[in-house]
Every structure is written in C-alpha cells, then in structure tokens.
Length: 280
Image (cartoon, rainbow, N blue to C red; front, side, top):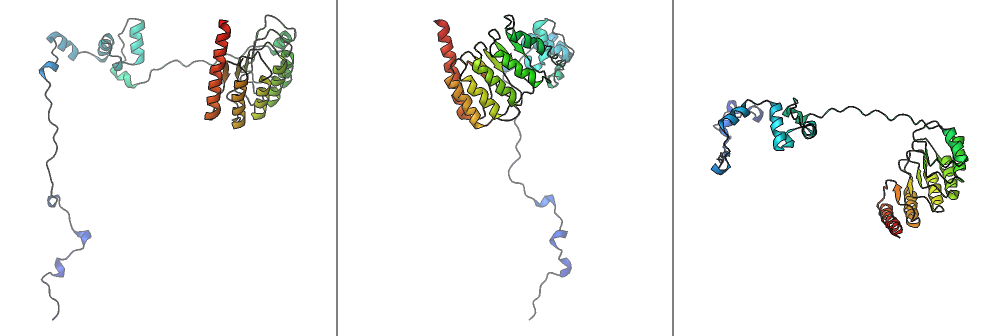
C-alpha cells in the first residue's frame, strides 16, 4: 500500500521562509531592578536655605572658587589651583569644564647658538691660560676636524682646563682617538662629555682604554651615539668603572642587565670611597 500522509505539500515551506515571532520565545527568571538606596539620616547633609540658593545659581567659575577654598583640587585645572596658591586670587573664568582641557603654555624657545670662538679657545689652551678652566663646544656643527685634533693635542700639556665638552658636534672616530691620546697624557681634566655624536664602538673602546691610564678624570659621559656600541663595549664600560675608582659620575644608558648591575655597584663603591677621602 502506498504511503499516505495527512500533511499536504501545499502546507510545507522551507526553513528560510519561516517567520519568527518574539512571542514564541520564553523568558525565564525575573529582570534585575536596581533597588533604590535610601541615604541614612546621619549621612544626609542639610544646608541653610541661603546657602542652598547660592549654590543652585552659582556659575562654573564660582564653583571653582569654592573648590579651591575647600582644597578640592581635583575639580580644577592645574592653572586654576596654582593661581589660587600663588596670587590669592582664585576667581578664574575657565570653569569646571577646564579639567578635561590641557593647559596652554608658551613654547620654550630654542637655545641660542654657541658663541664660542674655537680659534681663541685653541690659543688659550696652547698658552696654558690659567683663567680658562672650561672648554664648551656643544652644538657647534661645523667644527673643522683639524681644529678639534689640534685642540686635543694642546690639552695634553694643559694644566688648567677642568672640563671638556663636545656634545652634538658630529664628532666621529678620528676625534675619539684624538681624545683618547689626550687622556693618556693629561693630568688636570676632570670632566669629559662626548655625548650625541657619531662615535662607533671602536672609538668608544679607544676612549675607555685610555680612561684606565688617567687617574684625574671624575666624570665621563658617552651616551646617545648614532649607533648602539654593542655588548662588548658595555662590558668594557663596567670593567673600566670597576678598575677606575676616581670616576664618580658616568653618563650612559645600559641596555644589558649584566653590565648595568656591575656599573651601578662600581659607581656606589667609587662614591663611597670619595666620601671617605673627603672625611680624612
């Protein structure tokens, strides 16, 4: 007997054509309603009618004045707060909305160019001028290499210059080698700064090896060169600080944990030795 069904093909529809009704979905449970919290009587704050009326009609600037008086500095900007402390006049029209706005400060002008006359400095170093104790050539970009080399040569026998700085002068390895030769003979220089230049690892290594032969240098800064000097140079820096107790200030940002820890320990020891020497 053929199969029979009471379901007719005209009643059948594909699933994609079936309609969905929200009434067919059952919701279980009850929706959460946040209960209203009643403020206890001891926590309720009541103000005098005159004060409530004054606060209701206060402007943002006046609210900042009140906040400054009460010490609620989080409702004010830094400018409003320090105006209140310094000048005593706390009325500021910026309003409470200024909290989310950055304060506008005047841009800081660039430093003026270095007016140092290199030829005059070279003459003073060669003549061993006793009034010339600092040679600062920072940020002078176009110094001839010949003049820098002659200056390092003159510093070998100079006995009055205490500080020599060549920051951001585009000095490279030839100048670093000249500085290294100067350190092996000079016995008066205390501060040397060659940061922000183009000295490679070989140039830095030459300077560090020369520092071992110098007992008067107390401060050395070699950071921010154009390229990272490498692990070997950082290890040499730590070794130099350990073997040269005269150095109490060293300018370099270590990238490796090992030499960083060794350098920090050596600097602590060197400064402690210097402190004990001053006592005696």
